[in-house]
Length: 360
Image 1: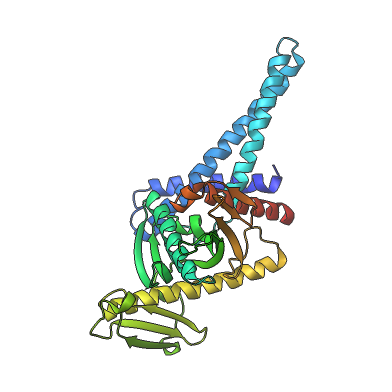
Image 2: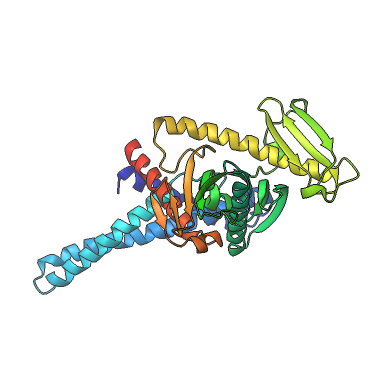
């Protein structure tokens, strides 16, 4: 391992000991905000330092075994010990490098998940409904809460557009690579000739801002319109102007919300989605600048970028960014996304590790 990385690990070990001492002091809880920060930092450093201790122990084992090589009776045993220790050390180095990678500050956040029907008409709207169910089932597997924020149902089922809020620790870290174009190939129920149709939806995954105030939104930049909400086919027509449409004039971002009977609640929900969209736009601008100097394996998150194809006749899903094909489409559409999300996270970590090596 490089001296610079070892020096950093030694510094973090000292910092953990410093935190141990500070948390043991009688007045540690006098400032609760500071106490929470220290306990959070302690929780993050603990596993890293423990792994570093294990790495150092393996290194010491290798040195001890090295000294035994000169003893003919112990030589074979020493060689086995050295080989085993070196194998462990190599894996520990990779794990330590991963733990030292810069963390995405949004990884632990809740998300707004937006699905829009694209090319393909009714079939695209039906696929949007299928994607919503897929992500909802994935959320249930992770014990996350799912809240409907806004929906525009299609007349034959599915959605022209739908926004849900997923509430759960690490939601953004698991689903942030879902943004982009999702293409489906299948035979529609209305197709009498058995021909395969291709349609598409776009997915946007946006980290939720802690508070709307976290994003600088000038009230003078907002145009807020109210109107009467209506469901599919004109059902549940509201007798008051409870639906809210907010336009952010500088960016042209438009958010509509009509799911609640209360105009006040719809406005609050719309402002949260607006804050998330503005935050998401800022993130994508930052990512595009980084991508200009370094190729991103996972992709830019551009909505127009086709990231995945779901082929129903062949029962396969292909993620084009990492050339991963899985022949278990039924399970994937039922929310079994673990293998896929793990592969995307692993590829992203590999890219970061490669960039770290280039920088060093």
